Length: 333
Image (tube, rainbow, N blue to C red; front, side, top):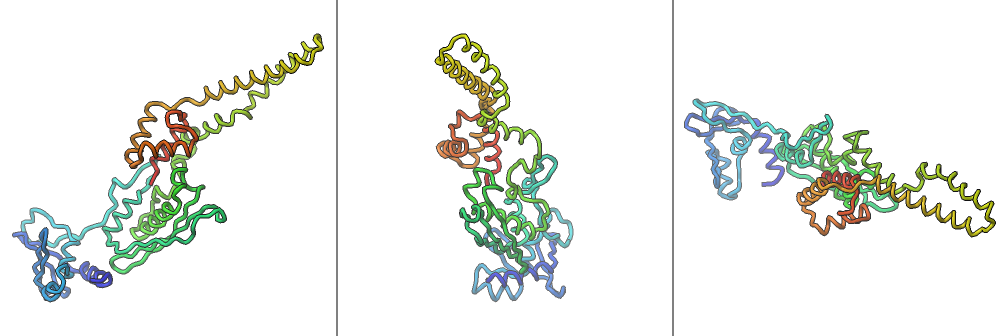
């Protein structure tokens, strides 16, 4: 059967009523409501007493009539004491695919795809509209088109660039643009108003100005410790040796005093930077290893990711960098 034939049969099947008798047999009313067709669905075989099934099943063993489709779209009820019309399946986004973060709800792309399949998704295609290059700011743009069983068509686009992706995802811009385009397209098809987590740049977009943003500032403070205002204030101390040089007219002592001051300033800066960047805790290290195993990232690849993103080994990560890396692994698609 072609996709269009399946679409037409699904439309007709949704208009039929399904009934289950006392002995468990299932019947489907004809479109005019004058005839009941007996439908049997087993593990390996499906059958119907209508003429359409008898005629086409001989040619195609996988053929299903609209009456069989009507039964498959219904929910059988156990323990029915008398004949009763069965309810139709109600597509629903499963709670496991909905995440509540700081009072805001977001859905996962996997959940939207699951709901779309429940609603009868027949086709989902993605087209790359823009390949990421230096000239366009390394931005990938994709268009997704979804087609439902009743012939409805939905389309939307998704973009991804280094500015709206985490460092880990920024290496896979086309893949992320494709996921975002499909997520937006399927959300329209399923009438879901909440955004997908995959559409966010990072978890900071959800959390807002909280502890997460403070942790991201620590690495910049540690690495750029030179321009701190605390060190220039010690410049007056450098002038004290200059007063001593007035009694001793040897210029060599001036050079030595400056050298000692500069080395002293460097040591104080280094000690301060070490104090301001606490090392990664054991809990953070366990979290990184657990997340990498769930994502299927090997130990070697994990070490390479840390080296590329932070320029150091995993064991030497600071507490702030470890927090950033953990959030990156949590949001990895």
